[in-house]
Image 1 (cartoon, rainbow, N blue to C red):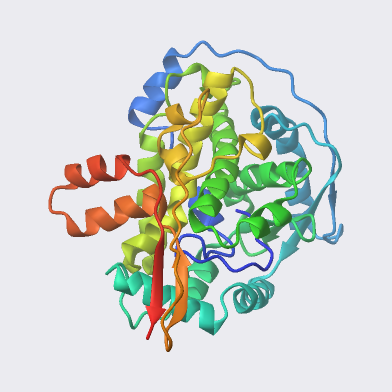
Image 2 (cartoon, rainbow, N blue to C red):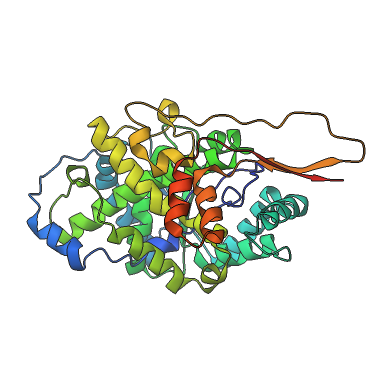
Length: 375
């Protein structure tokens, strides 16, 4: 999960300030077909690079020292799995739940002020995707406080872990967040997300690439732990479908607020975690190397995440759609953005009885634009 600096994003899925790393904790990839696949794999050893990790936590605290050691032990593997050798030391710190609450309150006040929350709510209510009475800011605050276990803050170049989380439950979170810290050494995460503040679908696609890289590397670590040897998931034709299914099931089990939230908000939160790893797997498998799926390789829309075969080696970029024309007197713009293929699918599934038709229709997406006016 990455914390994003101030910047208004104008879609429900693009409005998240931070996302829920608790979804990584306890993710069971060891059962059923996944275990059978692991038993059949021919695993190869791989050299890992050496990085360093510094900590701002009190050295006298036994738990903090153990956390530092845990992270330092994970770092070499995560460098190799993410394809991102460390260029500098990583900073690690702990935060209490109270400190987290203060941090989230500040970020929500900056990224989702009342007028922005109101325009988002009105727009998505017109699509019939959320109730007009939804208190979006309160829902997001509840979701984030309920779920966050650890996060990387690119503004402070620091990886934070909540100090109340038992050490045996934090290892997967550390593995994931270490990748975000490494990403920030190659591309300015703050600037990237700020540059996409008015493009919800592109912002979601960028987050899916970032979270997908971190999730994919974390999955390799989990599978390697189960196998007792280095597992290279790019050697498989696809990732086991059970990974996303387990993640979705775990999310619902762990979070009552998420389970009861409108589906477009559920999907907006989870899509980078469920769609991103498959995109990264396809991208790396097709490229034959673990290159950063950002910069010139940045996916332009959720269409690329959902259909990676259209992304590499030949890009099928979306068509830009514009709404032109002067407004009559007495009219004003409330909100304007695009849904993208992913939210278009959510919209169609919400109202079409035949979900297969929704899938077929959304797959034909090539660009969209909406605008809500008062008058």
